[in-house]
Amino acid sequence: MNVKEILAKLVSFPVLGGMSNLEIIHWIKEYIESHGVETHMVPNEEGTKSSLHCRIGPAVDGGTILSGHTDVVPTEGQDWHTNPFELVGKGDDRLYARGSCDMKGFVACCLAMLPEMVKADLKTPIYFAFSYDEEIGCLAGPDLVAAINAYYSEKPKYAIIGEPSSMEPIVGQKGICVMETRVNGSAGHSSRIKQEVSAIHEAARLVVWLEDKMNDLIAKGHLDDRFNPPHSSLHVGKIHGGIAPNIIADDVRFFWDVRVIPGDDVEEIIGEFRAHCMAREEERRKVFPDFKIDVIVDHPLVLPLDTAADSDVVDLVKRLTGNHELHTVAYAAEAGQYADGGFQSIICGPGSMDQGHRANEFVAVEQLDKCMDMMRKLIQENS
Image (cartoon, rainbow, N blue to C red; front, side):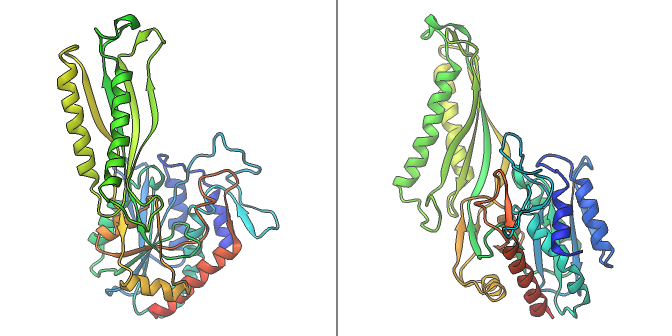
């Protein structure tokens, strides 16, 4: 199968983040094993999802992991001009489908190059590592990385995470943690606003605290000009609460995220927020003894990536792609998790995130060709 045929198959699996990915991962497993390569599954506790890893080549140190994820973001409410789960070419050098860019294009390139990898006389191995639930918080990444470290007696050296980067080397990504805050106040007639504790009013104060904290980090010089924006961000994206304008709200939930530049500590920021919430609880319980604020981790921390410009993996990807300008991204990916697992990690893959997560997502055929060329050069490097 060529890369377009494989990509057409991969995008036909409508696996959203949070859904079971067993159908697509079993198809990938069967395809890889049909070329004589042994695969290893890393299921979740319920057995409803699984990551996969495999090694092509000898069991020696110094190999390269090619990493991708099998889930995609939703299409509901988007103005798609074609079936999002059918690969469509319109004669404009673009292949349209959900996931064509982010990031089944990279996975398709890996699988399309597998026959050449198997035939090559590799001196150092190439690994595939494909995960689930990346789009809802990189949830499977840590277990997959741990499984790779535990299973193989040898130690891979590099990890190339094929998120869309226009085939440019990405050496830095922000970390992210998604939080939920629940505020329990007292209900009552709106005329009793001073006798009750409004969950909406208290939640609004907490939202402002988060924005003030972000601005305080900026003012104190917590900046990294490699990123846009060049600072850690705190953002509230969803809020629920209240039932009528004349009823004091007794329950509010809001969801927020922290995206940190390398060097800032997510746990420290969240710890300060928790301390502020505890102080606010103590104060408002003088009015309503059952006042309560719960701060809950909705999606756990995804580690940032900060790969040194002079590291070996950077030199490798420069040679493989011919691209020497280094970049960073504000989005989160599994690269930081691979780096935490002991692998020199970098992001480099076909397509641009400008096309990801939107209606009529596409990947340019030229980008797939460049990715295939990168992998051919990787085979040569490892032979």
